[in-house]
Length: 422
Ligand code: HAM
Image (cartoon, rainbow, N blue to C red; front, side, top):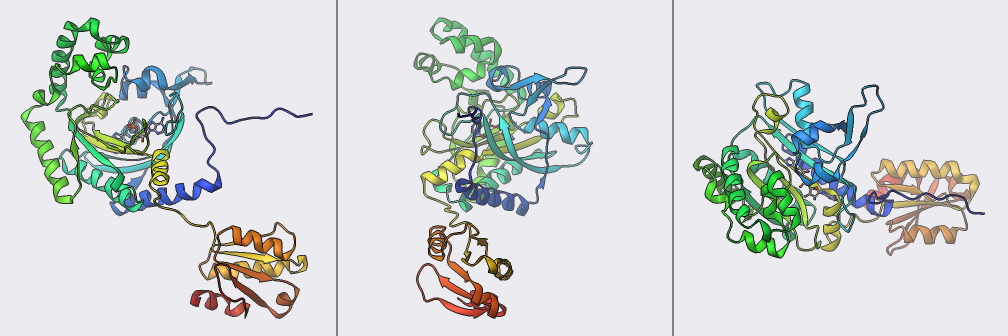
């Protein structure tokens, strides 16, 4: 009789050892770059009060309107809690809470799962992983240039930079956005009946998001709409021009996209996305921008901020699509031991080889020597280290190069030296 079997929740994946090596290598590249730029890690809770996101990310955004995992706390006050859909608001909350935004700049990074109730498909999951960085307390365009340059370094390191386009836009100051919003709603109001239902609803909630509509009739109306760049104030234009010239001097290529608004409400000035055509509909692997109003919105003093978050799931898919960053086999050597009496000695041999800097797996799955050798070969390792009763008695090891070469017998004391010299 079969019992109940359980499956992972829709949109939430198990990442098994055959893929996690790639994940780890990718995360290491990002973490190393963040360290090299002097950013400090911040670890944040997965659960926050719902109000943090509805206020920080914006009531009328897709994330807050329909994608949050929200439930009542089990505490007496039954506060509404939400699994974090993103971490920028949490970062601002944490730094504010700990008094770390007062008269000082902060550069932090984070990584971990985010949760959004979206329709799952390739590259879009309900639990997904981000690595992000946020800078607080610095106003100039140099911050955005540094953040973008950092992304470019990571993408180059993991072998996907050539497959990506950096799209860049400026939303102008908060005041420019208000003026633009009015002009846009005025124009769209005159064409209300030609808009799709979603866009009609957004007229009152979040008209800027109508610019993202993919519905052809709405797109046609949009061709005659007022354009955001015409409303951007001179100061914001100068900020943006400086950013572009810094990117030029860093040698980072970009494409200006005046239609890029991003789906989160906190942005002001610069917004950017790294996109690829290699992943179909889910082609944005990283998004970010400046959010000078966020800290004040959450109850702090006016504090400039800017950051980005990369979607690790999508970067892994992109690496696979462009055959970049193969992490190689999981170990360099496998210890093969067909004589149970020599098990203790096999453990010593494995340790000696690890001391020589190799990644060593003890086979331990049993069976004849031939079977174990087959497994060692299939693992992709470079060597099999063969141990039996004779080797244990004489404190020697058989080194068999698995990718061609003769087997040799060496003393355990000479193992490290021999492996290094191979
Ligand atoms: P976002 O554009 O919502 O921005 O997400 C950033 C990245 O996370 C996306 O470009 C994508 O690669 C990945 N991502 C988002 N949703 C999913 C999903 N359902 N499945 C797989 N990957 C996904 C933010 O989250 C902002 N907090 C970024 C930021 C930081 N802005 C300033 N600082």
